[in-house]
Length: 142
Image (cartoon, rainbow, N blue to C red; front, top):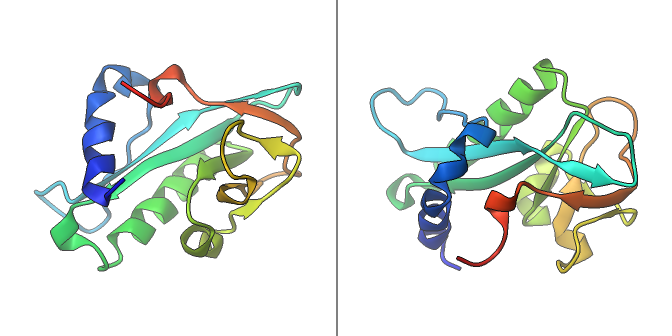
């Protein structure tokens, strides 16, 4: 899906915005140029709490490749870590997200997706084992 399609898809999920922790683009005043969502996830088979899912991340096409995406990811991760999160999962490009400490963990699963693209860092302790479930707002399809 083109990047702009991801932004449109995120907009269709607005009724669930109360479950998200949106992060504004750092250093940009008066204009929305990007967005990252962070929401609680459930890891089945564990008693682990305080894990979050990152995504979607989108940046206005005319502002891409200017550092806004990495700034949003960094600010989002810092924010949830300061709030006591134990870690964060996402489905994304390992080449982009690896710089933030994301890596694939075979025992942490999101069914139906390539394992190498489902990644997580642990902020405290180790990465748990189990199947991850995002909020229903993030289910594929319309």
